[in-house]
Length: 198
Image (cartoon, rainbow, N blue to C red; front, side, top):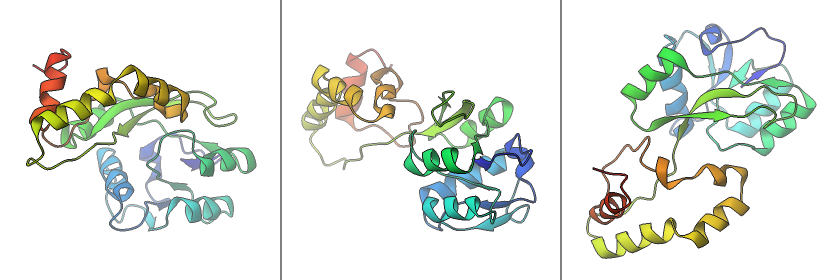
């Protein structure tokens, strides 16, 4: 995400810019560095700041940053406010760089942010990381199967559709995209029965 009017059109244009990549130890910093590397940008090729999204938004608004990375579902309050008060542009993550990133980091999947998800902001193709439920291999396969089955029930579907805007995009058919760890035997059984796993 960049401040509007800076003539930054691609992740590749971030070389030499002031970018917040989040705090050390955060998931966002891992994502940011992977994405930058996919565009040939390494540590030292940009002026890094290590701020959380709230302070990043404030610093961008005040002119102290050119861009910042944020891992979140859309819409999010910080970007909604920035789009309204300051003006922002989203940078696409697509094409060969996106393919390269997904090949190296299996937890990424293709996604898109639609036009006007934020006021007057053009939509883009992007990469997403999925939320994952993690359990121990000691957990009963039958219990994990039933929990997974409940996750994809009609009742849960209604709750997802009625909740956050991103809830509508949580689909059984895409649940295995960007999976970075092995499935528990109980979950694998459910997805096999659903025809989603060979």
